[in-house]
Image (cartoon, rainbow, N blue to C red):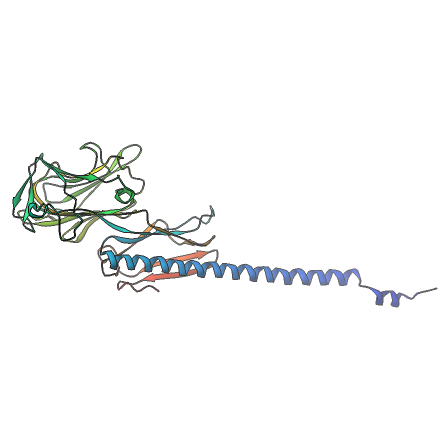
Length: 338
């Protein structure tokens, strides 16, 4: 029986028709895959933005509660290496306070003081409270070991403040096991500037930061301080930041390191307050999401939960990126997080 060519065409598809349909399906599937990929990126970026705000809110809450060192360390991450960005909320812990009051066995109204060992120092009337430790050039006060517990490790972050009435220059404080081994130190120079030093491992390189002259007043009580937050070393006088040393990561801290006050300066010392932090709470971004930063950033909050005006001059913005997508999180000086 003879079958016409028209009937053959009615029973199936031509090769051209099959190719056209296949091409259309491929295009549709490509659009669908791209749409799904973009949707996935949007979800990951949105989740990471919410996580960033949660980390900042946590640090703000801790700052209000502890009224001490509270900050968020922002790690940019590395998109090329597949390492997402991360945040660490630094938790404040008051570790040592010294007021040198004999009448109450060295305890202060804080109730958590740890008395140091006086090595050549004597307690005399005239401190900012009632009494003070008098240091000659060779006298010092040895505090407790700082690395005896995880929360006492200065390499993770700390804040040290003390009241000083100087009569001569010299070392104010060292975090180390002896005068020759230390990780951090703070000294008073002859021109009444402050000198901070940091030792790096393993080569033992020392970096120095010197403030302008006369940030300390002679023959008057001064509140001086040194703080480290995982990124920067900060020197303060009377609550004002007088110098910042950036990129101070990878520091050496002696395993048996202790807080040593004095050992060079001639002065009256009173109300030593040492605050340190634990390793903190980690907040990891979604895979593929990084921060648009060239280096780690520390966002600091004061005791009221606002941005620390000493180190932040205005609103802080961090941008989260994932390929072509970008979202921004900001904290203004009042501590409002958006």
